[in-house]
Length: 265
Image 1: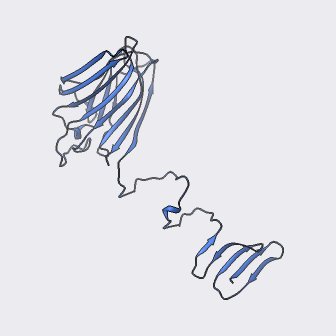
Image 2: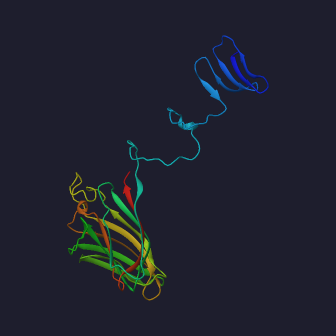
């Protein structure tokens, strides 16, 4: 037996009492919730914000997770990606000869850049430099090895040990019809993090990157370039970004990229 509190639809409130210490909450004689003598509450369902609920068993949680702010989480293992910048610039009447991103900092180990599309006004090369506090590094210590391939298996190599910039791809077709696309991955494998301006126990590490970029060549054929480059005698922890240089005609009319920060596991 239990104490019963019944909201009867015909006779109003009805009470039944005993000494069990338990209570049933009823509607029209049907129990909707129960409270036992130990204070445990059982019900068909619970409705409300749940703001004060604690110690919920993870196995009992189902459904979609809400958006949360994880900035205060600690002790969470594993690496991950975070969107740092989404670049979407288009101006067919005022082309730009370069684009600089200065968001590399000590918050992330590496940076991943997806190039959704770059269109130049005329045929020409796509080039790149590293930045130190926003200024392009122009010393002739850029070292690069790149292999290019066209649709008919013709190969093109770009190699240098003493250039003042990287040439990512040569003589891409100008115009908006077939923009260049691909990715760049900026790697600081073991040294102090980007733009920290100090060394850690791993010592001095050169800034480096790998990339793949494809598009239509100036001769109207498909081509792709894959390569790796670094700056000799330069430390990644002094660099805070990269500069793309658009050598085709009067520059780029479209620049569409997403830049991610990467934390190693």
